[in-house]
Image (cartoon, rainbow, N blue to C red; front, side):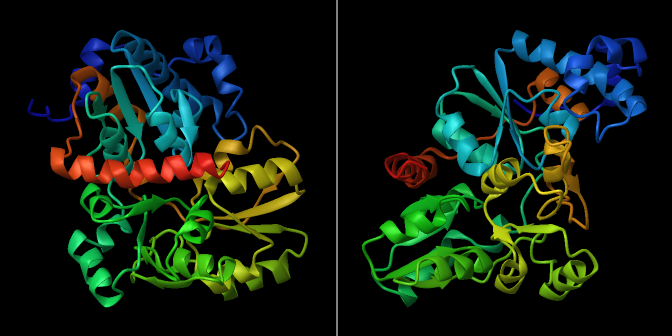
Length: 350
């Protein structure tokens, strides 16, 4: 089916989307999850969309999978399941609904489709890409194989279906070290994030890790000097970095971990002040759960993640637009790499 052109006026003709303080008050239980970071006037704007989406997803027998980088109105307001790339990939294998709406970027929607070829997988904005995923092609994987014959290819899930299909196994930042360590070869190819590979190399010194020259536009912007300067100005702040950051940034941090690892760390340690060296929405989404933590300092926003909005989610469900398709042969090969990751992660207790 040809996707219909996004039309806010079309939505307004079917749903009452005017800002509503009264509806906002009725939905106070949802708002309580985000009231530290979302103002009451903004919630009055969001509430009609949240109500419409939650009603429509039941009618469509749909579930919404939302990445931790989604804005609080999506993360707390409409998501059925939230998590990092690994958690969402695993959840995609467990959902029973007919429709999956992926609130994340395109490679995540592809992964859900790969794992659920018979289900309808929607992404609210087809333009929600990923600079890291775009940095490598299947041909690039073959170049690495030719350069390092016999070395297994461990590919980050932040890649296209074609790249996954050309790989041996996938990984996320939360399981990369364990998956690399489990490879039988002394040399392991990691694609496409050079910084993740370099940080994992320090954790798994028994392996020779070689990498593709790719990076995430969010995390590569941080510099070690920025972090050191901030620590000098704010010595009591706990600095927590994602492993997609450059190694010298990770070295300056008090803790480095995946998206889920960062969340676990902050919940466990509850530092008085914390700076999350990752995407902006992370701190916003856990702020109300941890009122004792003051989330401070700079962050970088992912322009691709922020293409997903309540309005676009409603449009996608209303019109069933944004269906993600993956060619059958590619899907089958990619599914092997993703499933190997999931199976090995479960085997290792991750």
